[in-house]
Image 1 (cartoon, rainbow, N blue to C red):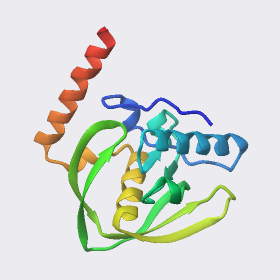
Image 2 (cartoon, helix red, strand yellow; image 1 turned 135 degrees about the vertical axis):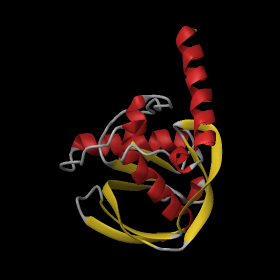
Image 3 (cartoon, one colour; image 1 turned 90 degrees about the vertical axis):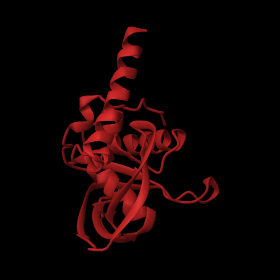
Image 4 (cartoon, rainbow, N blue to C red; image 1 turned 120 degrees about the vertical axis):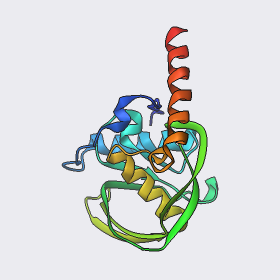
Length: 172
């Protein structure tokens, strides 16, 4: 397993729409292992493949409370098939937008479908943190970031901050 470098805004890769995974191969399994290792190292509760520069529809997640009880999930070609009308606000962050957190309103409950690493189709209901996380990560697969749910003013401030940081890093 390898910890991969994270793609950070304003990198335009984060706006790509990821391509479907065509089949479960050894390469896909290795990528899943690398994504989980990268996610745990960051540390985060979710990671989309595009966040390590791979534009395919694959996500890793683990919303367990402690390292002792890890419950890693690998979602291939995930999609939301139902969302509740009730909304909930959660404070979200993103490994591609380091150390920035903001409240985002999303559907409180969702049903999502994905393929697991055995090639089986799974349908699952989620609420709470898992519902928020799966929506956040599927957004990544569609080139959407959590800051897109914020006011234009807040979004512009965040982008300006990270563009300046990227310029400083490039000049260093």
